Length: 316
Length: 316
Image 1 (spheres, chains in turn yellow, cyan):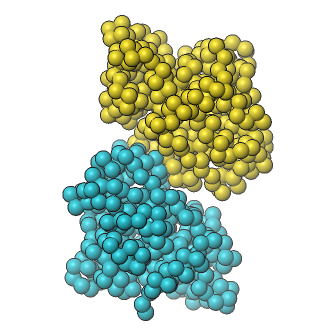
Image 2: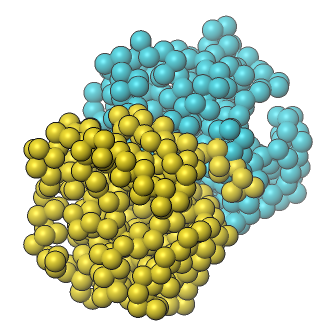
Image 3: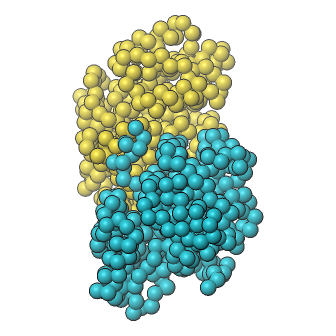
């Protein structure tokens, strides 16, 4: 299957009534610190606080009536769980959510608040997949993959479409790379709608499966990622890897303290709440500032769902 | 001296090149929780992170060339210190800042970053006034009062002018009340530009000098305010009291835990960083939600300069 420009345009129209067109913010201080012209695409202001609302909405809108009647199921470390719960609720569909037990409590609470039915499991990919299989066997729900799904990738790509519409002539777009839904959507959207823009991924060193995968030319499966960027602990899937391999320039790896520093800068200077995953692109930009000096760079702030109680420890 | 509508219009024009016109945000969740239609005037996005940039800029722009050459001096628990430092820097004027030793470290660092020269003192009003007097004796700088100054009040009032321009027909405006610069400016601006809008102040119970002052008809001087809303620990001055007495409907007192809860709600739901003082209006709205049900209410988010390291303790 090959995604087309037309697929993106139709997706954008399909989900528009259900999502926010999020603002693009700039900061004189960040521009001065980085030497680049930086544009923050603020998906922390998206409904339920993250870009995942886009892909979840698109995927559910593509289901048949019969599928909708039996509900949807997914496993997610957090934001996709909330996104499926809220999108399902708005479309009057039942949502079954498998969540690893170490998910931030604010994310679990939000899933419940949106009416999602949670089943907890131990925090491994295997346990997540086994548990969701059981839920589906019991309910007949349709599985929604958090990222390795073309409808999800198309939905996530609309964030980059909006950024490109608002800021023409970007030299670079830097999305964070987790399972690859957002970053594959970004790379493809840039390819179709702003061919001169290079997509460079940003990934924590402690969860560098995508970096390794792109370097070795096949998917590297990490088993024990270690990063505070909880949205980026997942592995690539075959669909997201296929797109990244072709359309993503390269990946910049960042350290944990660089993520915390980028998060602090964003919160102190732009006065917006972002989750650690959302700070990874700014960390990458600052790490390789020489590459980006004088360039127009769009950063995708993936979300703002952070456990406020954790912040004190991070910023001690 | 009587401030006029024309004074506000001239102030707005005078300071426009030096400040941000800040956005007005809304939240479905907050509307649902409060039962009101709530509009957040986001002065946390103002330059240096708080409304005080407006008044400081206006006051410095009114100085003579001779005064400018000798610099300006002030005492401030934080935001006004930053505001004077940055406004002075932009207007090429030297700034001498007296800060109580318990000011948040992020605010001290910001003052230094903007080029302000800090003299620390013990955290009492007396020590602040004595120390600034010494600085002025030595330098010849012009004293800028953080709030009890008509040019400062006019400057702060422009935040409310913008809110009224953007959201016509507000039933209420709720500013936080500290020394009264923001709230007096708000009450007067509402009087001139939206006479049907009532201005209701919001104040911490632990720093309720303005509430007591309005009730007893003369200024009540508190000596040991206890609140996390560090911007609201100051007493009213005769100029701000005179305006509040005439143009402010009343004051709602809130408890510390209500301030923290409003701050948490704002950060979790609107995804913006606000300081405790900026959460006091939402706390007041939620406390008396019956009064505001179905009403259009503008809340002035005074600033976003919070020590991120403190947040963990607050939101434990």
